[in-house]
Length: 375
Ligand code: SAH
Ligand code: SF4
Image (cartoon, rainbow, N blue to C red; front, side):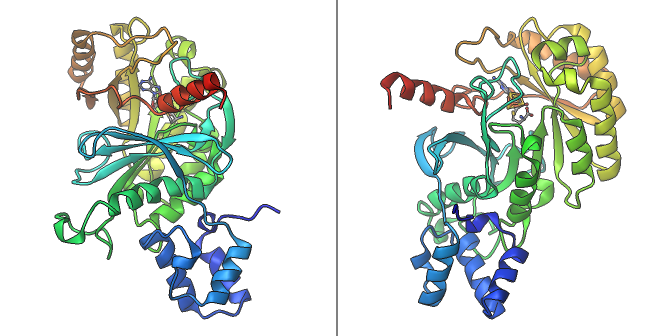
């Protein structure tokens, strides 16, 4: 029998189990403290839990961590982490130093971009994550561990005395206060595990990350966008638009055939009205595909109608794919044309994009290298 991982359970589920075992409530608080504040990776580190309880936990649950395979980038810039899961699948996370202009509020901390699936079934033509197809959904604990494993790594480098920013909780070694669900996979295609993981990462007894600091990005799964609007938590929503007409979007995103722009816009409208928050349109600029000025008019109309902000992102070259990013003047011209129509828009201009590439690329490279060497 495959044991569930302890970090895939909500507090209520664990409380029910502890009640069955006739344990006092404070034992659960102690356990959660070890899991989410101290982020221990071994049952035996839970020193104030009695030996027989540790044994019982070991028999009923796994306590999995992610194995770090590769890390690129330096501590002050964007860092990419490549992880190996228990079944040897590879996923990645990207840690980005605070950039207030991009997602969410201003912050002096870090944003983490997490993966939700191994591979992706949606096959957008420009994206590395979909190139090798979809393998499986991530379990809640595998989503949560991307945050905990990086904070664990960080905590070993930081002494409390030198930490200058105020603590998010009683533990000042916490690093991540913004999450973007923009790594490998389509988050809304792994809906239940995603919501469970985010509920735990948001809970005060868990990750303690505010729901308003969590942005979920989707290629546009209409029924799930509506379902998300009905959830109690106030997550931010980003839509990977990349084309403002069905013709252009349909060419690069097969999902547009299933959920064309009209239906997508109606679902966004529902989300926006329900949550009262601005949504974001992600718009990658790809040379000769969607960077022509004929997209500006329909994009402006859509953005203004839905109170959406537009994030323009120069395309990151993916090995083996034909697409290219447009020149800087073309990018600037596209931005200016949007601004001239009173659309709130930003253009990502930072340098050093060699490792800041979209999620999925590091895994692709590694998997191909492993195949070559026959490992
Ligand atoms: N599946 C979800 C979330 C993961 S993709 C979605 O599509 O929204 C996260 C973002 O990275 C999306 O906006 C996606 O379109 C973008 N992206 C994918 N490949 C890219 C590339 N090569 N360069 C720049 N952005 C890319
Ligand atoms: Fe999947 Fe998003 Fe990549 Fe499309 S852009 S293939 S939905 S990860």
